[in-house]
Length: 399
Image (cartoon, rainbow, N blue to C red; front, top):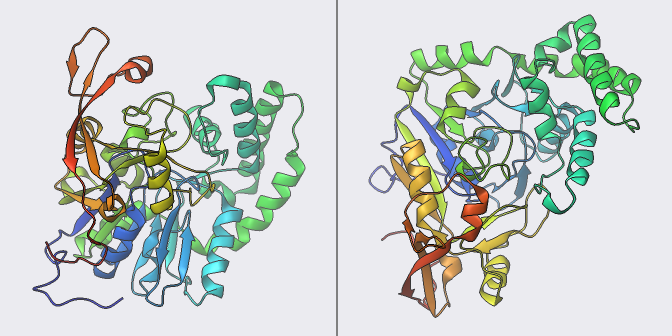
């Protein structure tokens, strides 16, 4: 990717530290923006989530890369990619991702640092994720079954395995045994065996060792040296464990709070918070979704926008832009700017609707998102209707 001239580069004035966050239910196009901005930053960091996040990006030749754990900045050969302490990492898949990048000619050697405080996501967690989801029957969360929830649960109950534990096999064995025994007490039959997991991670420890580092120290030193740091958020605010449509949420904090705790870079260091917002909305899995379109327009948006998950391949639910949810996300995060994506996908519609308020069953008007999912599910959306357009705007670069 080539840099544009300063007078044409709207990104030239971005601050030393910039975070790119999802403002809806995910899949807003964060990876594309990060890929562009990564050309202007020295360090690109992931701070939360795991392999449930999928970012599709393209190199300058048009080659497609589907990234799940490696930060999107890996295509910038001058950048350092950091996987922070707030991330849950499935090491076998991370190594496969690195191998795939290397095979495609993308050098990863010395360019990826994995926090020694990050949590390890086990195959055991993936099996537990599937079993717990099946138990929910008609009230399934719609998890990706990538083990994210059980991995964060292990962290919260203080018997999770950190990357640093790989360097001490006795510690690794003790903690892995504790997790396995806890799982077997809950589910009497497991395909994952303790012996297999121990053997696997004993081998992986040697392979992953060169990538392990103290990312908090590294990022803070880099900041003091004037290096530019870009934070790549995963998932989005409406899936936040605290602020999303709980319990139909992810297991981490994709809002600004997760950025702070997931990297260890103090709040006063951040100069730019960019909220990525799609011109319509999508979500995957279960949970209330006020502006959802269950008609031909919803299917059209799905087809035109290629709304199928990078990680799972699942068709995404589609709906109109929800300004109540967007304003809510903005108040929580304090965005400096918004990056609007996929506006061109609305081309050809006779009219475009924008949700501007919620009306409750008793006729009250809400301009914020209720805490109770039942209340969200029962609202009637108040829309503003705008005329559509037929012109092809996909190649427009100036407004």
